[in-house]
Length: 275
Image 1 (cartoon, rainbow, N blue to C red):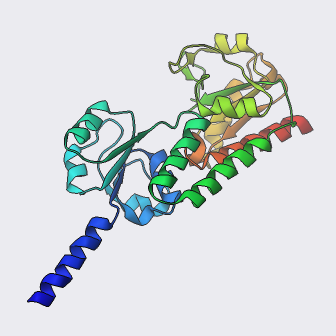
Image 2 (image 1 turned 90 degrees about the horizontal axis):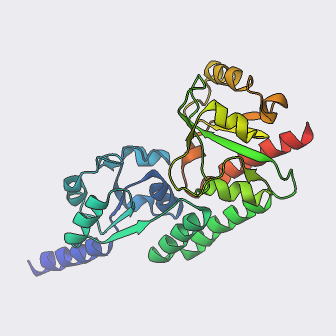
């Protein structure tokens, strides 16, 4: 009997010492896995689909449908989130559930998140490796082309309607454009999501247009239909055929995988230079 109690006690101590992580956004989930803590993720959201093994983890909802009950059922030692759902975060705090909240909107905040989580999980060396890769990829963008006006279109549609979503001046895309020695064709001091029409795009007259379209990977016909509309615009990018697609799923995820987006961006700049 005493031996059984001793074994049970050791088991409980080990259980208490294990990390049980719940991640509430894809970018946070990817960073946690990249730091080597994937085996400790006990729950995430339905949009957390990278790496592959995170698809089979218990789901606690989506961006606006996070279930507090499901989080509690997961018995987390820590919940890692972004500041999207303030109500859920307040409830977690009121229940004394350890919660870490981050932003990943700029490159600085992405690197801060990686560094802080690396320290929290005692994975500092791995965190620094990830940060160094981001810094090195940014350095590789220099002196390819310069002073070009770059327009990044988010989720382009088949027609040029009045609801064209583009990247503003307060996201990591802006940091990448600036690191390359070029500039965003759009400028505003507002932090709201920019929505423009074709007339405004003509007035901006971008030199390079990039379609961020992570759900068009392999859909050649759909991309051609989009391209046919945009190529008709009287702007430098269309005239010089500097309209491109970045259609991989990592394109819109602000995690350590931003290095892949930067590599794609570099290839585009090289293509513009070599024409």
